[in-house]
Image (cartoon, rainbow, N blue to C red):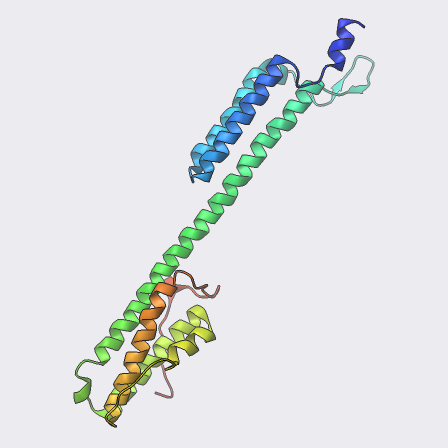
Length: 234
């Protein structure tokens, strides 16, 4: 069998330069993906693309004359060399896989940062609600009963809307629940009102660490939140 026939039957990845190009692609792609797993997204993508550039450099002359559909002298369409065809497929994979990982991590990272910022803002809103509640309890025993109750109902309406808008009816019901609380009273209306405030403050303080694990309603925008400023039943 002639040397030409042997070369035609030779596997496209057996040649030394093919092995070199595959090694460069594999090493760069693996290293690039590893870097991206450590959140070094840009460096990882550049490393992976450096492998692609290396493969192009190894096959520079071939790619310069590459024609995916090359006309033979007799007018028939012929395929490019198998070695080059295989390398094009490997290069495409070396571009697509790291790029896909990069885009996924980039989008996920952006969403995570946005969610983290929203949670910080929500904690600030809850902190404002706590401040308002604590202010209501100042000199509570000297307050006029009806006025104290009216201001408390208005505050309760505000915090109830906040929690329901952010987390839904279930969390709002929990905020208003006295389950597990022990209240001591002397029979005065002011004392009962003050106990109500204290229990809501406890619920709000318990909510703050849970903000990091609770799912916010998709329609809730804490950065542009408008507090409820009307209460017909207050």
